[in-house]
Amino acid sequence: MKKKPIIGITGAYINHNKNMEGVYVHHDYHRSIAANDGIPIILPFINPDVSLETLPICDGIILSGGEDVDPKFFNQEPHPQLGQVILERDLVELTIVEYAIMNKIPLLAICRGIQILNVALGGTLIQDIPSQVKDSIQHTQKIERYRDSHWVTISKDSKLFQIVGSERIRVNSLHHQSIETVATDLRIVAQSSDGIIEAVEYINPAAFMIGVQWHPESMASSNQSMNNLFAEFIKISSKGSDS
Image (tube, rainbow, N blue to C red; front, top):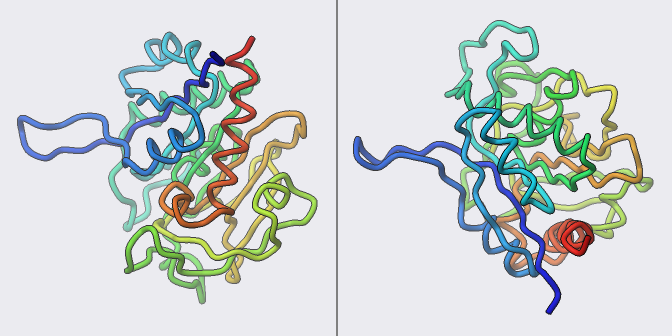
């Protein structure tokens, strides 16, 4: 029987009460991976050294959504609207990006994930869209996370276009930070109508490293274009599981 690829998902932090706290991943990630014949596991953010020991079992990696990125990692002071940051998570995920590139591990970066990917490669972030971007649209939607809320335009010469099959798509939106200056090793492949960067790809076309600012995992069960992103990611990851 063919071995299913193991997909490591970085975790956010959750605290229900003083006796219930730890690493959290929304179940939509698990479901989208399992629906496309992958095996999801959660990667805890203990420290970079421990993280590196867990990564060899992964055939693909997802940088998930969650907390804000500490602006010290892109040489800025904290904006008044900066949300919660977790130093340990930032350090671990910066290490994960380096590992994925060095070891040619497929990587899908979602929401916060696209931001930490950009920072890891030398880019900067807008710390708060509503107060820093004039005439911005609503990027923190007030409807259910699985519903789409705005349009995104995708470059026709991108992998993302090949995967989703359309130049213009509707996406959900659950963020207040975004890419400001894109890292030199990434290229912009999608934007919203207000100019916010919505997707990037690694400049090496042989690598699967895509970052999206929306949450495809929450739309994948009812939207084929979004599911295609997971299907392709897991298909590429499965090549590593067979080696």
